[in-house]
Image 1 (cartoon, rainbow, N blue to C red):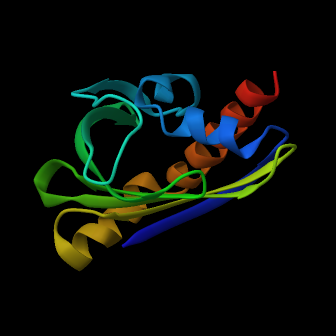
Image 2 (tube, helix red, strand yellow):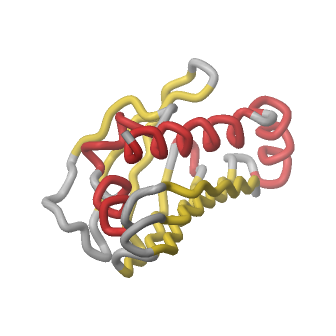
Length: 147
């Protein structure tokens, strides 16, 4: 399993940050590897809500079916995703803050297809791209919300 954890402080109220990160239609504004989203339920999202997302990593597009496994507005959300060839991912958003600033922590745990060998191959192929993309996404989110 590969794990990426990044965080950033955003000078915006926690409720505003939550609104943006929990709106699947706004993913294109801040998630660098996001390409499209379909089958988006009405807001507000609830535990059990699902959506289908197309992501692109190193020029390779792939689809992930996401389920919102846990949600506690405006502080916590955990998404569970099923990708190609029995790959899976868990994404966690943790928000801490008030009316002035928010600390946003993003964690992504990814299991490549092929078990232990697949995880080793995935680390060689992807390398540090996942962490760089996560950092870039959080930088975009920060710029979007502080503009």
